[in-house]
Image 1 (cartoon, rainbow, N blue to C red):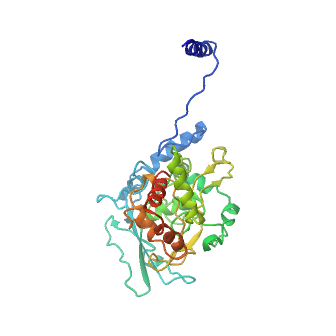
Image 2 (cartoon, helix red, strand yellow):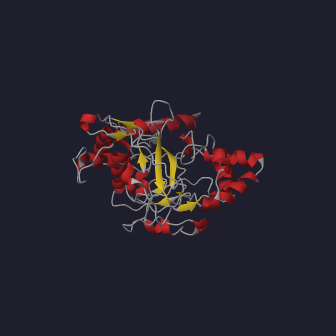
Image 3 (cartoon, rainbow, N blue to C red):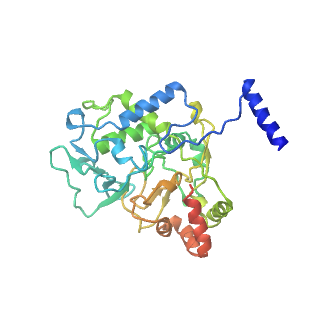
Length: 362
């Protein structure tokens, strides 16, 4: 009892003499900015969130064809910057269409593709061409948490995993590596965000040779909102989580879903950070059952390995949300993902449950 009194007294003494007491830092919640932002970066994050949430109208640049009126209308679950909620009120699943396959992929830009919008400000919606070579695919809205860290992963670190489980880097025509998008079509956030404004809302960003509907300054604020969104915080891991992580490696999931990378960036808060991505950001052939369309440099059956960061906050899985459970998503892996799917099916019921519990903690 005396020891406890002395300890408390010592603590009070430290406070009274101005010595800093250790503080317990709370991890950021989904949708929060990254810890450690400068005042200017935090201001840009806040201003960017306002642009991200801005609802466009036909008078302010919406359309004529669009999927939704603001970025936040599709990226809303569980908070702004999240995934689509798969509710009946919002268009949270896009329709894509292209013709043929690589190396002569036709993205149907002359017909309104590859993203065929589902709403209009008045003119009739362009139909998806009904040709034999046209292939249609759906895309669910991705979460954006931690995207700034993904952008900061060195290309050399991605290339170091090329060939592992057959993965190949998405080398784009500009020489950069694609890392954003289900088909790894975009190499950085400005390109990704510009395309989203154009394809999802019909909003034209300054710099394109057409009437401007969004300034470059507002585009860049939107980029910084996404860039500075905190990644999902690691959750407390107990003995069973440790077993699940070991099982994840043992069945071969980590061959493509590489657990972590270290970033390199001129932006201090994004530099030398360990990002628990669980993806190699490479393209993998997933076999005909999952194949839909070619896009960018990816063939119909090729998909960029989906990051599992933040998996615990998702309710639907795979590129189009077809899988209602994690177990269903795993067993549908084909092609280069088939060995891990087969190994999962060969696990005992307990080991499967341990692995699924681990995945739901990411």
